[in-house]
Amino acid sequence: MVGITKRFGPLLANDHVNLSIRPGEIVGLLGENGAGKTTLMNILFGTYAADEGTILVEGKPARIHNSAEALAAGIGMVHQHFLLAPRLTVMENLLVGMPRQGLSLDIAGARRKLDDIAREFGLKLDPEQRVSSLSVGEQQRLEIIKALFRGARVLILDEPTAVLAPPDVDGLFAALRAIAARSLGIVFISHKLNEVRAITSRCVILRHGKVSGEIADPGSASTREIAELMCGQEIKPTIRPPVAKGAALLVLDRVSTTGHPGTTLTDVSLAVCGGEILGLAGVSGNGQKALADVVSGMLKPVSGTVSIDGDEVRDFTPAEVQRLGLGRVPEDRLASGLVSSMTLAESMALPRIAQAPFSHRDLLSRRGIADFAQKQIREFDIRCSGPNARTGTLSGGNLQKALLARELAFDPKAVIVAQPTRGLDIAATRFVHEKFLALRAAGRAVMVISEDLDELLALSDRIAVIYEGRIVGVLAAEEATVSRIGLLMNGAFGKAA
Image (cartoon, rainbow, N blue to C red; front, side, top):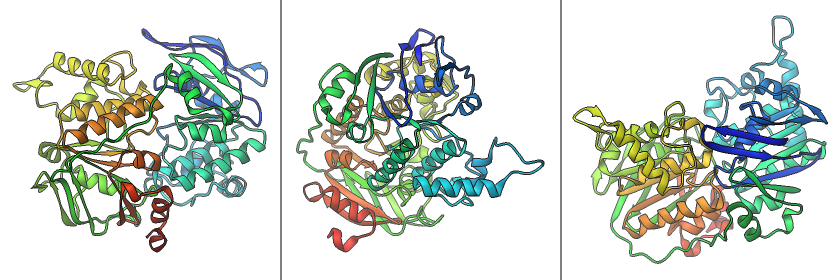
């Protein structure tokens, strides 16, 4: 990529960026949220057209106007927000858009190719399973398989480990090394600097749309060195000061749900007190989504109760739990958090559209909606062109900041957040953590569902572990370790004790 420039109105997303990818190389692409990483890769994948610049594939200029042309040029991309058809099976998703043999699809050939990918790269899925029943981690695995299935020679991975538990990260890295060993090129976008050092052979760093530096040997670079190139300043670690614990503000008492095995809850009891952050750890697909949906009013349990500040939830709707004082940040930012086709201001106002400052006497207040969004954009440093930016054009990290800003603006008594810093850069992660610690200091209750154990260990006063829909252990911060939590996450209860 040579001299790539891209503007969105007044926002200069990429400013004459140069980037090369060689066979067998894993290139780290780093930068703050809004630095232009995803935009640059979307240009390479044909989602956007560059305003200026040239793309060369094997030394020849390439015209890439859409994803089909990118795939034809051997370029595949796994987005942060998956592009899958949830009602179809794994095999059907792989076959969408593929050429036919006469009047039929080559299903037998597709199965052989899927088996080859599983054997060569360790990426295995049941071809007959519906995508809607896959965990988030399995859906990402399918996206990687889909790119390889279509013959990608350059594979772009946008935050590939954000949805994975630590054992799965090891499996992914083994697969990426196997892919690179077959002379494919990989672009690895991540904010997890320890992973960048472990897997990449070279790093290119963007800041404010420009290349701010390149690191030839990431394995020997310090976190401080990389962070300063990304953010222009030193980032200090989060400190969790002591806070007096108050009364229980969020209580689940023997809650059970029905549904697919592995996604249900069985007799779950948890309490989160004011002045406390409770972390919830678990391998993706062990009931975390069901727990978050119950607490946030999206799913009615078949038994048990949920209470917020002493008031039992009777009507399991988002509006009711919101009225009782719960703030909710869902795992999937666009499917159940924000609306991609709306402006950012509209997305941020939608859950409380009938109340001030968004409406008055049943009439919408456009000024109130815009002013609210502008204030949150400023306070949370949301990188966008303004309140009228289309929500779907924001980077994943900025979408997350917008969700947090919206929920915290109304001073909830308790907050449940799922994967709160997925896709956030190191500076934004610290900013979000400080917001949680401020809630804790103000006597609020915070439940953090995360697959990032380092995050849970840094933030939590206690860590609960969920396995196959049951709470199998609750550890105080001072006794929690990665190894103990990991054993509980994988069902080794006796060893963890």
